[in-house]
Length: 170
Image 1 (spheres, rainbow, N blue to C red):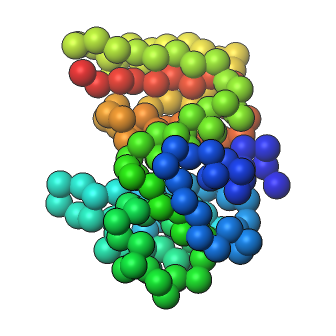
Image 2: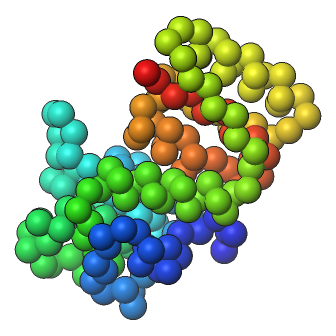
């Protein structure tokens, strides 16, 4: 198992977390907010967006192999039939960020964060390109520079990442 795996202890440490069926949980190396990209033994975090509500896809994620789901605490009764680990929290976006922090701490990579009102993407690309000559670099992809995208970047960093180059939007 990877040193980066999210353990049951990590889930218990999420703020406001209440965990149901913890005995069926297996340490997971993969966290997703997109039910279409679920892998076996992954964690699915249901996030309510402007157009879609991830809670509508919890059962799809479980059917595709998620062994844990993180949902809004007010919706627990909607998922009584789910026989996997269910983590209820007050704010699933915050929990997603907390999981990214767990992964960042386990990864131990150096972090470079690019902020500002203009030139962030170009700067990120140049820094990542230069550093990749000597280090294993993982960087923000596309324009994923909001609070969800930065978490996504951290959570998808390979185990051998030595430097994370993160772009933060304004």
